[in-house]
Every structure is written in structure tokens, then in C-alpha cells.
Image (cartoon, rainbow, N blue to C red; front, side, top):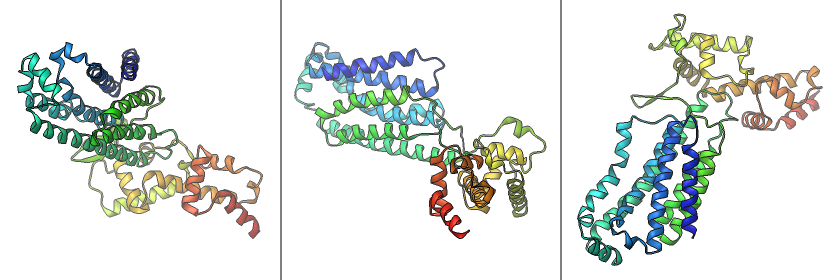
Length: 369
């Protein structure tokens, strides 16, 4: 009954995804993944109820599914973070599943009666092949879970290199999804079939909730080039004749000039008080290519864009609270004036930079007066 509930939930989620308008590539991958899980659970349900013997031509088909869930996870995470390769390369992820079908060709060529005998005797005659297959499945799970976590971490680093505020960019749900797959694979590794498919059903519910009901999925656009992540650039910026050092080598003199210009504008214009300031936007204001600006910030400030801008915001807050006329304002109003859009974000950055809380810092100022 539990498996049946899982099947119903899975195909209900398929129905929701099919009806979703303007489906993204990630939605299409998730749809395919749900369909695969649904079919897998149906085959498991038939095996548990021993009804699979009524359809002997289905025996052995389940061998492909453990080898496609890992690739589906990886492709889903890749699509959500815009690190997806071209379609031809993506197809190679499913090559082990195809190879497993070819490897068990002798089983599929058996008569229906012979298949049932092999099945009831736990793969008698195919022991060596099953051992190799088991190693392949376990390796696949570990590789794709780790690979997906690496993609997520890479994506987070790219976000910090381009955005000054990440409060609305929450990727924790995607990390929970990956860990959910990891839990399922733990049961695969310990070969506990009883709890394995229970975990799969629970995971389906989790994946449906996180993958469909979450709002405002953020997907950073990146371009892979020579193994290096490049920053997305507005086409108008690329065509602007005023843009300096566009895709050219950067000398120390040029870098110093850009840094001096950046420091001057941040002091006089205080663009950092814009809570939604991005690297691309700042580069356009300075008429510098975003990749060049990122390089200058990393070199001269020894920070990524995210930490650099928020350090300036904290410095402005410290300047404001030291002025007696600002005592009438609350900490929250002042942190908003500095470019923060939430108190939690402000507290995090302030404590990281000053090693104390805003309240304690203000109290120390008042004692000195």
C-alpha cells in the first residue's frame, strides 16, 4: 500500500508539471525524472506483490533505473544553476544505463519461463555480472551526489562574485534535495531493500514540495569557456564604445587606474547604498568590463564583490552612528540607509567585520562620549 501511495503521489506531481506553463529546462528534466521514478515504483510494486510474474517480459527492466537517477539529479542541478552542457554531452550520462541493458542481453533473450527461474533464484547464472552491476550502481550514486554538491558550491561562489545582496537567493532547498538523494543512496550502499523504497517515496514527496512549490528559483547565468566561469554581460555594455579594456589584457597600470576610479566613485557617489547593486551594473557605471572589474576587486581589495560592497556598507554605518545627530534613528533605519535590506544580513556582516554586535558597538561609542 505504501508503494501504491508513492506511485500516486509521483504521477500527481507529473500531472502538475505537465500543466505548468512556461516550463524551463529544469522543469522538463524534473518531469522526466518523476516519470522514471513513477515507472520504477510501479515495477517495484509489481515485484513486491509478485504480480511481476504475470508480465515476465518486464523482468530485469528495473536494472536501468538505479543508473539514471544520479544523472537526473546532476542534470537538474546543472539546469537550475545554468551549468548545463549541450544535449549530446548530457546523453553520455545515461550511457551506463544503456550498457547495463546490453550487458544483461543474454537474460533478456531467455524464454519467459527461464527468466522467472533466474529471478526466483536471485540471479542464478548471472552472479558475476550482478556483482559488477552492484559496484557500478553504488559508484554512480556517490559520484553524482558529490558532483551535484560541487556544482551547487560553484554556483554559490559565482553568486557572491556578482551580487551584493543574497537574501532572496536561497539555495538551501536545493542542498536539501541533494542530501535527500544521498540518504536514498545510503540504503543502496548498505543493501537494505526494505527501507530503500520507503526512502524513495519520502524523497518523492520532498522533491515535489521543493521542486514545484518553491517560489522564485534563482538561476545564475554563466558561460563555460576553457574550464573557466565567465560573468554574464549585458549586450549593450559589450557594444558600448566607451567600455574600457574590453576583453583585453590588463596591465598593472590599468588595473591601478580602475581601482582608483572605483574607490573614488564609491566615496563620492556611494553606489553601494543601492541594495540591489550587481557587478554588471557597477561595471556599466564605471564603463569597465565586469570580468576586469571583478579581477581588480579581487586583487586590490582581496575580497569578492559581495564582501567588498558589504564592507563598504558596514563602514558607512559606523560613520553614521558616530554622528550625534543620528542618535534619534534606530539601528534598522540606519542599516537600510547603508544599503542592507534586512537586519539579519546587516548583523551578519557587521559582526564578521567588527567582531562585535551593532548594539555593543554603539554602547562603546556612547561610553566614550
